Amino acid sequence: MNILKRKIPVLILMLVFVMSIMVMIPGMLMAEEETDAEVEEEVIIPDPDPEVLEFDITYPEIQAELGSTYEFNFAVTYDMGDEPFGLEEEISEKIFDIIVTYPTEWFAAATPQYQKETEITAVRLKTGTAENLRVVAIPLIKLEPGEYPISVKLKSSIEDDLLEGTAEFTAIITST
Image (cartoon, rainbow, N blue to C red; front, side, top):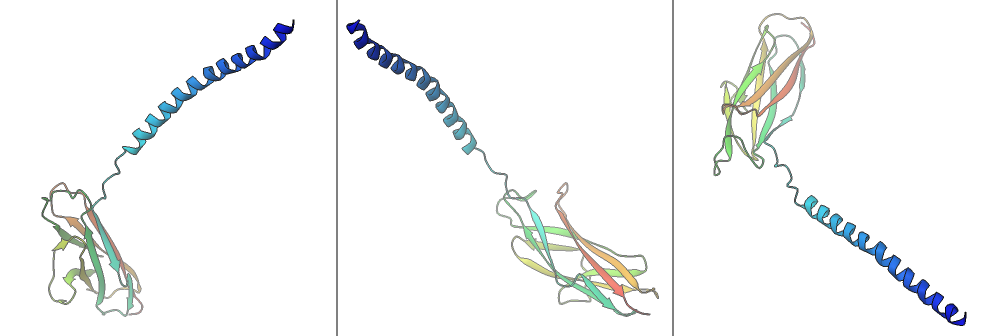
């Protein structure tokens, strides 16, 4: 019995050792799988920066009496992003068609910032450079006081290019 008392702690120690090894082996295998999953997550490539048109509008609403000319100034900046549509590698500019939308009783046109008399229907924008433009709007007939929406859309002139941006303005007639 004395020998059995000495062997029991040794057997318990061996049993604990064997059990701990049995628990450690699956844990090590799981840890390797997690490491592989972490490596796969690091390989994810971020989406490229998209092409954008940014508008900086000074005065989106102008109030005046009937018969006045409304002049809306704005700057537009083209950012070509990482993968510009329809451009060769060395080219960093794009031509955009200008579409001015206005009520039927009005006339409105886009002009260069400092040439009010010149109507433009397209503009060449270099990436990262702001182009200052203006929309001149004139009511053609006697209108009631109120708010009249005017918008300017710039749309890429490259076929199948979906890049476009819009600036919204409001001409407010205060009295007749």
